[in-house]
Image (cartoon, rainbow, N blue to C red; front, side, top):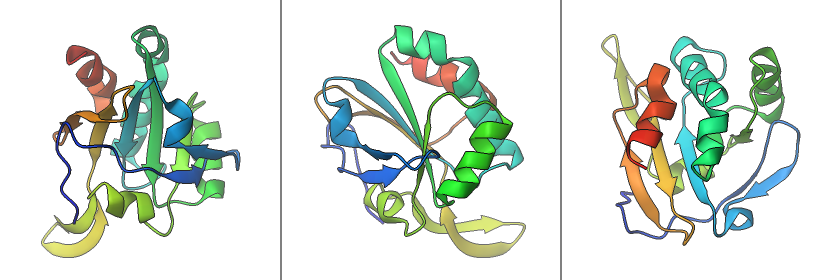
Length: 152
């Protein structure tokens, strides 16, 4: 797994969002980006986190942030998830786990004594200069927006 640190240049990425639109990090040059990784669409923790970002969009935008979510789910799955919960930001499909691996969030996990490969829930705050400002590894899914704004 790649290990990134604050101050590192954020790895470039390009992927399709829930609408099939190409989205890349470079199109947000000069803006602050909240890039959050989550394991799976429409699961309890992932839904709570997405809804926190949905409900906090006005505060996040006012603070200059653009929110992008990433998981290995498909464009179609993201579309259903975004529609079901009226999500007002882009969810990027990473079925080949290229972005997840570049950011070091794909790896071994344990759940109920079982070990498997999956996405570690982490959030990267990327500055307008393209450098990582913060990495949140202990994500509070219900208070994800507050975690971002508390460190702004």
